[in-house]
Length: 187
Image 1 (tube, rainbow, N blue to C red):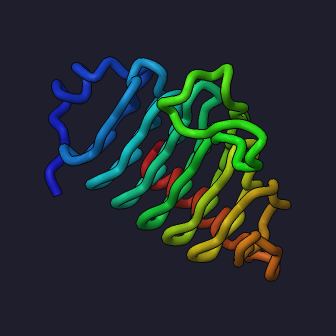
Image 2: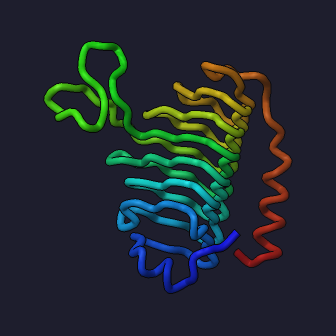
């Protein structure tokens, strides 16, 4: 995988750009001036980031993910991972049929849903999952593959299905590992 050089990253004019950031030369970045990318975070091949997006430290956006921050924004706090093909939307059309849909239609003919999305620290989202506007994925949650997250979660849960449902509690052992990692790396 090829990554953008430091100078190429600077030319994108991110609102803020941390140390050790890696962004694939095959990723598509729109509105970088609205984005904050934290230290040692990585965005892989064929990802699309658009609108207001904030990645904390050590966040990994694996291949083929979409983060559509739009106006309200999407925030991933420290140590979040999006597995292959995850889609996160901070805005969406109203699918009820009461209004028209599609970005080619003037706003007066449609009703859009705008709401920020936040993934708290130590969240992992499984492959091909979808997170809808207004959702907060609480600290330490694991979202199983192909899960539709339409409502906010409780901390340290494992969620699966469409729509997402709580399966069981997630262990918190990784907190100690995080502390050791940060001490060893002086981060």
